[in-house]
Image (cartoon, rainbow, N blue to C red; front, side, top):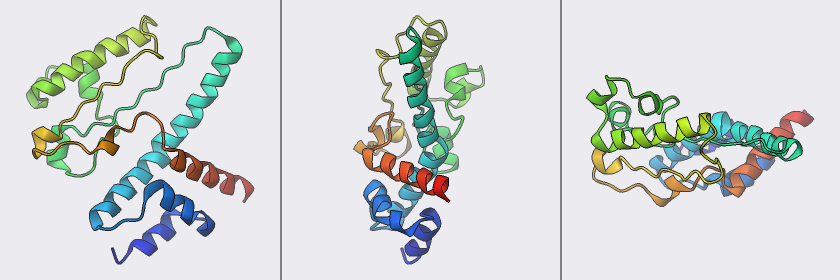
Length: 182
């Protein structure tokens, strides 16, 4: 907790954006809160915000061209095997690959629940690739492996959905503008 001001100074390159950062990510009360905030910040800066910008551009293009289907995919599950090796890191980049491709080896480390999700993810991916599945009607697969790791339930904020919060989106737009104007 004592290093939080220095961490914020590293994360928020424009000091005027600190209040917006605080509204997007909250003010930590514990060291665990700091880990959660930094994890969210990294995920948003490298994956969620750039993906949101591209997705919005493709949606606009689809409106202009008509008939173009646009889908967005987010894998935000902490897999049991990864959680045991690196606790607290959350979903890992590429962590869904064993579920999507389900190699024979995957059956040696995926739980029965994870294997069931694997089958559903494969069905949806194939449907999207063949354009049989309507991206707008594709449901979110909510999957929680936390009960298999430590008996706890996932917190509500874990399943906020595919999009950044309004506050986080505003923060990242402001960060982008600050870079464009410098």
